[in-house]
Image: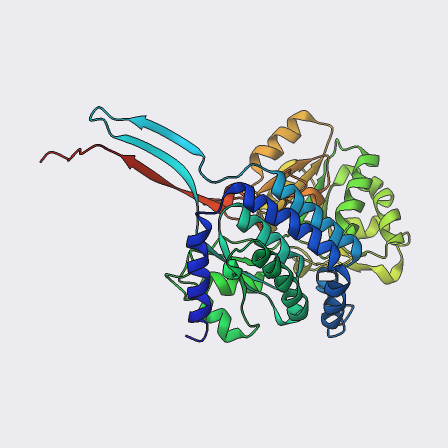
Length: 416
Protein backbone atom coordinates (compact mmCIF):
# COMPACT_ATOMS: atom_id res chain seq x y z
CA UNK A 1 0.00 0.00 0.00
CA UNK A 2 1.61 3.27 -1.16
CA UNK A 3 0.08 5.36 1.60
CA UNK A 4 0.43 2.90 4.50
CA UNK A 5 3.19 4.86 6.27
CA UNK A 6 1.13 8.03 6.01
CA UNK A 7 -1.87 6.22 7.46
CA UNK A 8 0.23 4.80 10.31
CA UNK A 9 1.44 8.28 11.21
CA UNK A 10 -2.10 9.65 11.35
CA UNK A 11 -3.24 6.72 13.49
CA UNK A 12 -0.44 7.35 15.99
CA UNK A 13 -1.28 11.06 16.04
CA UNK A 14 -4.92 10.25 16.81
CA UNK A 15 -3.90 8.27 19.89
CA UNK A 16 -1.80 11.16 21.20
CA UNK A 17 -4.75 13.53 20.79
CA UNK A 18 -6.58 11.75 23.61
CA UNK A 19 -4.08 13.31 26.04
CA UNK A 20 -4.31 16.88 24.72
CA UNK A 21 -6.17 19.22 27.06
CA UNK A 22 -9.23 21.10 25.78
CA UNK A 23 -7.54 24.40 26.64
CA UNK A 24 -4.62 23.57 24.32
CA UNK A 25 -7.00 22.62 21.53
CA UNK A 26 -8.71 26.00 21.79
CA UNK A 27 -5.39 27.84 21.74
CA UNK A 28 -4.42 25.96 18.57
CA UNK A 29 -7.68 26.90 16.88
CA UNK A 30 -7.46 30.58 17.81
CA UNK A 31 -3.89 30.70 16.51
CA UNK A 32 -4.95 28.91 13.32
CA UNK A 33 -7.60 31.57 12.71
CA UNK A 34 -4.92 34.19 13.23
CA UNK A 35 -2.53 32.46 10.82
CA UNK A 36 -5.27 32.02 8.20
CA UNK A 37 -5.61 35.79 8.14
CA UNK A 38 -1.85 36.39 8.17
CA UNK A 39 -1.27 33.92 5.34
CA UNK A 40 -4.22 35.15 3.29
CA UNK A 41 -2.05 36.40 0.41
CA UNK A 42 -0.09 33.13 0.26
CA UNK A 43 -3.27 31.04 0.26
CA UNK A 44 -4.93 33.21 -2.41
CA UNK A 45 -1.84 33.02 -4.64
CA UNK A 46 -1.89 29.22 -4.45
CA UNK A 47 -5.64 29.20 -4.98
CA UNK A 48 -5.14 31.28 -8.12
CA UNK A 49 -2.95 28.50 -9.56
CA UNK A 50 -5.90 26.15 -9.21
CA UNK A 51 -8.37 28.66 -10.63
CA UNK A 52 -6.21 29.16 -13.72
CA UNK A 53 -6.61 25.44 -14.51
CA UNK A 54 -10.44 25.51 -14.35
CA UNK A 55 -12.99 26.93 -16.76
CA UNK A 56 -14.77 29.84 -15.01
CA UNK A 57 -18.05 28.48 -16.41
CA UNK A 58 -17.56 25.20 -14.54
CA UNK A 59 -20.10 24.98 -11.68
CA UNK A 60 -17.22 23.99 -9.37
CA UNK A 61 -15.34 27.24 -10.05
CA UNK A 62 -17.21 29.22 -7.40
CA UNK A 63 -16.63 26.47 -4.83
CA UNK A 64 -12.93 26.44 -5.67
CA UNK A 65 -12.50 30.18 -5.45
CA UNK A 66 -11.16 31.75 -2.27
CA UNK A 67 -11.26 35.49 -1.54
CA UNK A 68 -10.17 37.67 1.35
CA UNK A 69 -13.78 37.81 2.46
CA UNK A 70 -14.15 34.03 2.36
CA UNK A 71 -10.91 33.47 4.27
CA UNK A 72 -12.10 35.94 6.91
CA UNK A 73 -15.33 33.95 7.13
CA UNK A 74 -13.32 30.72 7.49
CA UNK A 75 -11.20 32.25 10.25
CA UNK A 76 -14.34 33.41 12.07
CA UNK A 77 -15.81 29.92 11.81
CA UNK A 78 -12.63 28.44 13.31
CA UNK A 79 -12.94 30.86 16.23
CA UNK A 80 -16.60 29.90 16.61
CA UNK A 81 -15.58 26.25 16.85
CA UNK A 82 -12.96 27.11 19.47
CA UNK A 83 -15.59 28.89 21.56
CA UNK A 84 -17.93 25.90 21.59
CA UNK A 85 -17.82 23.42 24.48
CA UNK A 86 -15.83 20.25 23.89
CA UNK A 87 -18.03 17.32 22.80
CA UNK A 88 -15.57 14.80 24.30
CA UNK A 89 -15.85 13.26 27.75
CA UNK A 90 -19.52 14.11 28.25
CA UNK A 91 -21.24 11.68 30.59
CA UNK A 92 -24.29 10.33 28.82
CA UNK A 93 -25.29 7.83 31.49
CA UNK A 94 -23.94 6.72 34.86
CA UNK A 95 -25.04 3.96 37.17
CA UNK A 96 -23.76 1.90 40.07
CA UNK A 97 -24.84 -1.71 39.86
CA UNK A 98 -25.91 -3.78 42.90
CA UNK A 99 -22.51 -5.51 42.81
CA UNK A 100 -20.73 -2.18 43.20
CA UNK A 101 -19.56 -1.76 39.61
CA UNK A 102 -19.66 1.83 38.45
CA UNK A 103 -20.62 1.99 34.77
CA UNK A 104 -20.33 5.25 32.85
CA UNK A 105 -21.22 5.95 29.22
CA UNK A 106 -19.09 8.82 27.86
CA UNK A 107 -18.53 10.49 24.51
CA UNK A 108 -15.23 9.77 22.74
CA UNK A 109 -13.65 10.66 19.39
CA UNK A 110 -14.00 8.29 16.44
CA UNK A 111 -10.21 8.32 16.07
CA UNK A 112 -9.22 8.90 12.46
CA UNK A 113 -11.69 10.48 10.06
CA UNK A 114 -11.08 10.38 6.32
CA UNK A 115 -12.56 13.07 4.12
CA UNK A 116 -12.78 12.75 0.34
CA UNK A 117 -13.77 15.99 -1.34
CA UNK A 118 -13.59 17.83 -4.62
CA UNK A 119 -12.91 21.49 -5.43
CA UNK A 120 -13.69 22.88 -1.96
CA UNK A 121 -10.51 24.16 -0.27
CA UNK A 122 -12.54 25.71 2.58
CA UNK A 123 -13.30 22.14 3.63
CA UNK A 124 -9.64 21.68 4.54
CA UNK A 125 -9.85 24.32 7.25
CA UNK A 126 -13.35 23.34 8.40
CA UNK A 127 -12.57 19.64 8.69
CA UNK A 128 -9.40 20.16 10.67
CA UNK A 129 -11.04 22.58 13.11
CA UNK A 130 -13.97 20.27 13.79
CA UNK A 131 -11.83 17.14 13.98
CA UNK A 132 -9.31 18.68 16.37
CA UNK A 133 -12.04 20.07 18.62
CA UNK A 134 -13.68 16.63 18.76
CA UNK A 135 -10.37 14.84 19.38
CA UNK A 136 -10.03 13.26 15.94
CA UNK A 137 -7.08 13.14 13.56
CA UNK A 138 -8.02 13.59 9.92
CA UNK A 139 -6.67 12.33 6.64
CA UNK A 140 -7.73 14.39 3.64
CA UNK A 141 -8.14 13.38 0.02
CA UNK A 142 -8.83 16.52 -1.96
CA UNK A 143 -9.35 16.60 -5.69
CA UNK A 144 -6.63 17.53 -8.18
CA UNK A 145 -8.65 20.68 -8.97
CA UNK A 146 -7.64 22.18 -5.61
CA UNK A 147 -4.23 20.64 -5.03
CA UNK A 148 -2.29 23.90 -4.65
CA UNK A 149 -4.92 25.43 -2.36
CA UNK A 150 -5.09 22.35 -0.15
CA UNK A 151 -1.33 22.00 0.13
CA UNK A 152 -1.04 25.65 1.17
CA UNK A 153 -3.76 25.34 3.80
CA UNK A 154 -2.37 22.11 5.25
CA UNK A 155 1.08 23.67 5.50
CA UNK A 156 -0.39 26.56 7.53
CA UNK A 157 -2.21 24.09 9.81
CA UNK A 158 0.86 21.92 10.35
CA UNK A 159 3.00 24.93 11.21
CA UNK A 160 0.52 25.86 13.93
CA UNK A 161 0.53 22.28 15.27
CA UNK A 162 4.32 22.33 15.45
CA UNK A 163 4.18 25.68 17.25
CA UNK A 164 2.22 23.97 20.04
CA UNK A 165 4.46 20.86 19.95
CA UNK A 166 1.62 18.69 18.63
CA UNK A 167 2.04 15.94 16.05
CA UNK A 168 1.78 17.49 12.59
CA UNK A 169 0.28 14.20 11.37
CA UNK A 170 -2.90 15.16 13.19
CA UNK A 171 -3.85 16.34 9.71
CA UNK A 172 -2.48 14.71 6.58
CA UNK A 173 -3.17 15.36 2.90
CA UNK A 174 -2.98 12.44 0.48
CA UNK A 175 -1.79 12.81 -3.12
CA UNK A 176 -4.57 13.64 -5.57
CA UNK A 177 -4.41 10.38 -7.55
CA UNK A 178 -7.25 7.89 -7.99
CA UNK A 179 -5.12 5.02 -6.69
CA UNK A 180 -4.77 6.79 -3.35
CA UNK A 181 -8.55 7.12 -3.17
CA UNK A 182 -8.97 3.37 -3.63
CA UNK A 183 -6.35 2.61 -0.99
CA UNK A 184 -7.99 5.02 1.42
CA UNK A 185 -11.35 3.31 1.00
CA UNK A 186 -9.73 -0.02 1.87
CA UNK A 187 -7.73 1.27 4.85
CA UNK A 188 -9.54 -0.79 7.46
CA UNK A 189 -7.69 -0.59 10.78
CA UNK A 190 -6.30 2.86 10.00
CA UNK A 191 -9.41 4.95 9.29
CA UNK A 192 -12.54 4.74 11.44
CA UNK A 193 -14.96 6.73 9.29
CA UNK A 194 -15.09 8.07 5.72
CA UNK A 195 -17.08 11.18 4.81
CA UNK A 196 -17.31 12.05 1.10
CA UNK A 197 -18.16 15.61 0.06
CA UNK A 198 -18.89 16.32 -3.56
CA UNK A 199 -20.93 15.18 -6.52
CA UNK A 200 -23.41 12.34 -6.48
CA UNK A 201 -20.96 10.36 -8.62
CA UNK A 202 -18.24 10.74 -5.98
CA UNK A 203 -20.60 9.77 -3.17
CA UNK A 204 -21.85 6.73 -5.08
CA UNK A 205 -18.27 5.63 -5.80
CA UNK A 206 -17.30 5.89 -2.13
CA UNK A 207 -20.40 4.05 -0.92
CA UNK A 208 -19.92 1.23 -3.42
CA UNK A 209 -16.19 0.72 -2.83
CA UNK A 210 -15.49 1.54 0.82
CA UNK A 211 -14.65 -1.16 3.34
CA UNK A 212 -14.93 1.40 6.11
CA UNK A 213 -18.13 2.93 7.55
CA UNK A 214 -19.34 5.86 5.41
CA UNK A 215 -21.53 8.83 6.24
CA UNK A 216 -23.04 10.13 3.02
CA UNK A 217 -23.17 13.88 2.58
CA UNK A 218 -25.37 13.65 -0.46
CA UNK A 219 -26.22 15.88 -3.36
CA UNK A 220 -28.65 18.68 -2.65
CA UNK A 221 -31.68 18.48 -4.94
CA UNK A 222 -33.74 21.12 -3.16
CA UNK A 223 -37.37 22.14 -3.70
CA UNK A 224 -39.51 25.06 -2.55
CA UNK A 225 -43.27 24.60 -2.69
CA UNK A 226 -45.33 27.79 -3.10
CA UNK A 227 -48.59 26.70 -1.53
CA UNK A 228 -52.05 27.99 -2.46
CA UNK A 229 -51.93 29.94 0.82
CA UNK A 230 -48.44 31.35 0.28
CA UNK A 231 -47.49 35.01 0.65
CA UNK A 232 -46.28 36.26 -2.74
CA UNK A 233 -43.79 38.79 -1.42
CA UNK A 234 -42.22 36.31 0.99
CA UNK A 235 -42.16 33.61 -1.67
CA UNK A 236 -40.45 35.77 -4.28
CA UNK A 237 -37.67 36.80 -1.88
CA UNK A 238 -37.19 33.27 -0.55
CA UNK A 239 -36.96 31.73 -4.02
CA UNK A 240 -34.59 34.43 -5.28
CA UNK A 241 -32.28 34.00 -2.30
CA UNK A 242 -32.33 30.20 -2.41
CA UNK A 243 -31.49 30.16 -6.11
CA UNK A 244 -29.05 33.02 -6.53
CA UNK A 245 -27.15 33.52 -3.27
CA UNK A 246 -24.57 30.84 -4.13
CA UNK A 247 -25.96 28.63 -6.88
CA UNK A 248 -23.01 26.23 -6.83
CA UNK A 249 -23.61 24.93 -3.30
CA UNK A 250 -25.74 22.00 -2.19
CA UNK A 251 -28.44 24.03 -0.40
CA UNK A 252 -29.32 26.05 -3.51
CA UNK A 253 -32.84 25.76 -4.95
CA UNK A 254 -33.27 23.43 -7.92
CA UNK A 255 -37.05 23.25 -8.37
CA UNK A 256 -39.89 25.65 -7.59
CA UNK A 257 -43.21 23.87 -7.16
CA UNK A 258 -46.26 26.10 -7.63
CA UNK A 259 -49.89 25.37 -6.74
CA UNK A 260 -51.90 25.89 -9.92
CA UNK A 261 -54.20 28.43 -8.22
CA UNK A 262 -51.13 30.66 -7.73
CA UNK A 263 -49.67 30.53 -11.22
CA UNK A 264 -50.74 34.13 -11.80
CA UNK A 265 -48.19 35.12 -9.11
CA UNK A 266 -45.35 33.46 -11.02
CA UNK A 267 -44.35 36.64 -12.93
CA UNK A 268 -43.58 38.28 -9.56
CA UNK A 269 -41.16 35.44 -8.79
CA UNK A 270 -39.53 35.49 -12.20
CA UNK A 271 -38.96 39.26 -12.40
CA UNK A 272 -35.92 39.21 -10.08
CA UNK A 273 -34.80 35.83 -11.40
CA UNK A 274 -34.56 37.24 -14.92
CA UNK A 275 -32.41 40.11 -13.64
CA UNK A 276 -29.99 37.48 -12.30
CA UNK A 277 -30.04 35.61 -15.65
CA UNK A 278 -31.53 32.46 -14.15
CA UNK A 279 -32.39 29.83 -16.77
CA UNK A 280 -35.85 28.33 -16.17
CA UNK A 281 -37.09 24.93 -17.34
CA UNK A 282 -40.84 25.30 -16.98
CA UNK A 283 -43.53 22.65 -17.26
CA UNK A 284 -46.40 23.25 -19.70
CA UNK A 285 -48.71 25.25 -17.43
CA UNK A 286 -46.04 27.52 -15.96
CA UNK A 287 -44.43 27.97 -19.39
CA UNK A 288 -47.70 29.38 -20.72
CA UNK A 289 -47.87 31.90 -17.88
CA UNK A 290 -44.38 33.37 -18.25
CA UNK A 291 -43.85 32.95 -21.99
CA UNK A 292 -43.52 36.42 -23.47
CA UNK A 293 -42.72 37.84 -20.04
CA UNK A 294 -39.55 35.95 -19.22
CA UNK A 295 -36.54 36.48 -21.54
CA UNK A 296 -36.78 34.05 -24.44
CA UNK A 297 -33.12 33.06 -24.19
CA UNK A 298 -33.59 32.05 -20.54
CA UNK A 299 -36.85 30.08 -20.83
CA UNK A 300 -37.08 26.45 -21.94
CA UNK A 301 -39.70 23.73 -21.79
CA UNK A 302 -39.03 21.28 -19.00
CA UNK A 303 -38.29 17.63 -19.74
CA UNK A 304 -38.23 14.69 -17.36
CA UNK A 305 -34.50 15.33 -16.86
CA UNK A 306 -35.26 18.84 -15.58
CA UNK A 307 -36.63 17.37 -12.37
CA UNK A 308 -34.37 15.57 -9.93
CA UNK A 309 -31.34 17.49 -11.22
CA UNK A 310 -28.89 19.31 -8.95
CA UNK A 311 -28.04 22.19 -11.28
CA UNK A 312 -25.22 23.82 -9.23
CA UNK A 313 -25.64 26.87 -11.43
CA UNK A 314 -28.13 29.63 -12.30
CA UNK A 315 -30.69 27.13 -13.56
CA UNK A 316 -33.92 25.85 -12.04
CA UNK A 317 -37.04 23.90 -12.89
CA UNK A 318 -40.67 24.94 -12.29
CA UNK A 319 -43.37 22.36 -11.63
CA UNK A 320 -47.13 23.04 -11.38
CA UNK A 321 -49.24 20.91 -9.03
CA UNK A 322 -52.97 20.70 -8.49
CA UNK A 323 -52.85 19.93 -4.77
CA UNK A 324 -50.74 19.79 -1.62
CA UNK A 325 -50.52 16.01 -1.92
CA UNK A 326 -49.20 16.26 -5.47
CA UNK A 327 -46.46 18.59 -4.24
CA UNK A 328 -45.52 16.08 -1.53
CA UNK A 329 -45.45 13.28 -4.12
CA UNK A 330 -43.21 15.30 -6.45
CA UNK A 331 -40.74 16.01 -3.65
CA UNK A 332 -40.84 12.38 -2.55
CA UNK A 333 -39.98 11.23 -6.05
CA UNK A 334 -37.14 13.64 -6.85
CA UNK A 335 -35.74 14.79 -3.49
CA UNK A 336 -32.22 13.88 -2.39
CA UNK A 337 -33.44 14.32 1.22
CA UNK A 338 -31.25 17.38 1.76
CA UNK A 339 -33.38 20.53 2.22
CA UNK A 340 -37.03 21.14 1.32
CA UNK A 341 -39.20 24.22 1.91
CA UNK A 342 -42.82 25.35 1.88
CA UNK A 343 -44.07 28.92 1.55
CA UNK A 344 -47.51 29.07 3.14
CA UNK A 345 -49.62 31.01 5.62
CA UNK A 346 -51.61 27.88 6.43
CA UNK A 347 -50.49 26.48 9.79
CA UNK A 348 -52.17 23.19 8.93
CA UNK A 349 -50.29 22.81 5.63
CA UNK A 350 -46.98 23.80 7.22
CA UNK A 351 -47.41 21.20 9.94
CA UNK A 352 -48.37 18.53 7.40
CA UNK A 353 -45.37 19.45 5.25
CA UNK A 354 -42.99 19.25 8.20
CA UNK A 355 -44.32 15.81 9.14
CA UNK A 356 -44.61 14.29 5.65
CA UNK A 357 -41.46 15.50 3.90
CA UNK A 358 -38.49 13.19 4.36
CA UNK A 359 -35.39 15.41 4.36
CA UNK A 360 -32.57 16.30 6.72
CA UNK A 361 -33.78 19.91 6.91
CA UNK A 362 -37.39 21.01 6.38
CA UNK A 363 -38.25 24.71 6.14
CA UNK A 364 -41.37 26.82 6.33
CA UNK A 365 -41.26 30.38 4.98
CA UNK A 366 -37.45 30.51 4.83
CA UNK A 367 -34.70 29.96 2.29
CA UNK A 368 -32.97 26.58 2.03
CA UNK A 369 -29.70 28.55 1.88
CA UNK A 370 -29.63 28.34 5.68
CA UNK A 371 -28.74 24.63 5.67
CA UNK A 372 -25.23 25.15 6.95
CA UNK A 373 -23.44 24.23 10.16
CA UNK A 374 -22.49 27.80 11.03
CA UNK A 375 -26.04 29.05 10.36
CA UNK A 376 -27.39 26.30 12.62
CA UNK A 377 -25.12 27.47 15.44
CA UNK A 378 -22.73 24.53 15.12
CA UNK A 379 -19.63 26.64 14.48
CA UNK A 380 -18.89 25.02 11.13
CA UNK A 381 -19.74 21.76 9.41
CA UNK A 382 -17.95 18.72 8.16
CA UNK A 383 -20.77 17.94 5.75
CA UNK A 384 -24.54 17.64 5.45
CA UNK A 385 -25.67 14.08 5.95
CA UNK A 386 -28.67 12.91 3.93
CA UNK A 387 -28.82 9.50 5.56
CA UNK A 388 -30.53 8.53 8.80
CA UNK A 389 -28.07 6.42 10.78
CA UNK A 390 -25.87 8.22 13.32
CA UNK A 391 -26.04 11.70 11.78
CA UNK A 392 -28.48 13.73 9.70
CA UNK A 393 -28.29 17.27 8.35
CA UNK A 394 -25.35 19.59 9.10
CA UNK A 395 -22.71 17.56 10.93
CA UNK A 396 -20.41 19.21 13.43
CA UNK A 397 -18.79 18.40 16.76
CA UNK A 398 -21.46 16.21 18.31
CA UNK A 399 -21.68 14.01 15.20
CA UNK A 400 -17.90 13.44 15.21
CA UNK A 401 -18.03 11.52 18.47
CA UNK A 402 -19.02 8.02 19.42
CA UNK A 403 -19.18 6.70 22.97
CA UNK A 404 -17.72 4.01 25.14
CA UNK A 405 -18.52 2.40 28.48
CA UNK A 406 -16.13 2.87 31.40
CA UNK A 407 -16.54 0.13 34.00
CA UNK A 408 -14.83 0.69 37.38
CA UNK A 409 -14.64 -2.06 39.95
CA UNK A 410 -12.86 -3.17 43.07
CA UNK A 411 -12.16 -6.83 42.47
CA UNK A 412 -15.62 -7.91 41.29
CA UNK A 413 -15.84 -11.14 39.28
CA UNK A 414 -18.90 -12.52 37.53
CA UNK A 415 -20.42 -15.61 39.13
CA UNK A 416 -20.86 -18.79 37.10
